[in-house]
Image: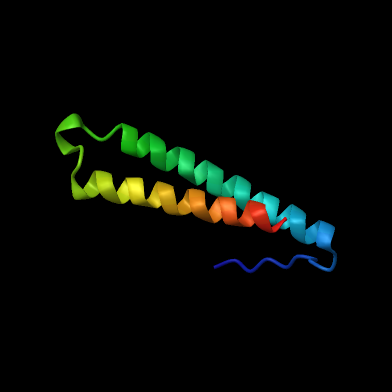
Length: 70
């Protein structure tokens, strides 16, 4: 795993980092929604569909929590 070093010495820099993370989470949510929406109709309500739906909800909640911090 690549280690990144960042300067989080100011609130502004920490806020920018959190905003970047939120942006990544939103991109992941969009990808997961596309995945879920392309699951065949015969699998609606399956564990596969429900798991994707749960991931979307959890990622949305995480992004909302981070947005509320800053």
